[in-house]
Image (cartoon, rainbow, N blue to C red):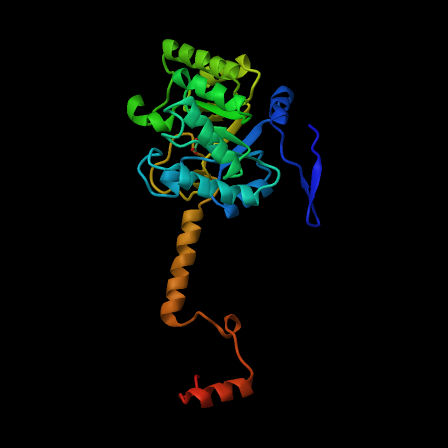
Length: 298
Ligand code: KIV
């Protein structure tokens, strides 16, 4: 894989990852790393870590906004977060996740909202969930010039219809349906496909049947890439997490301890110390105190 560079200020930053490089990575067997991010700080860290793709996921509804599902997050909220991520990232591909209701109604509305992700949000591409009735949406968005990442298997926007957050394609018939959906999404123009909570053999078969890369989350080791939710990966999600989550850090504990230490320092007066404060010239202080006629500050 060849990577060109652009100058940003004095720094040489690898140029934006091209969609075509992802297919090349699949051909060469180089696995693709993707993570979600919802703000500039997270996106900057993800890019510095070497992430190929940063997804502004609608999982934001749950991990950032505190909703019970991904359904309530709005276009405006997604655009707000996408802008913050896009501002921080130079090389990684920024994918805007189309929220529930932003593409289901018609091709026109899907295209209009995909364009908003690119024009207002600064996203490079968009992602949407489903196949079947969503295939014309994918075609319409791709024809408007915006690359689309598909998403099948467990599609959280349809969690009620799916009967909960559970693995999909676990019977022969349902697994065959997933293979057919994957091929149809490739045919419709998707440049890659997220496979969520799908049995390993099914994800493996889909991956070898497609020329576009698959990115797995709970879909086993044979996908062309892997994605995790930022908060899950870093241990910011407390309580139950899905079987496929691997925690690479326990930031919740680190953050809770740091915040508790701050509270304790505030209560005891240990913070701020002299080095955290600003002084003023003695003559200015004297003039100030004379003017206000107050007791001098300690
Ligand atoms: O919204 C999200 O975080 C996602 C990933 C789980 C792929 O869609």
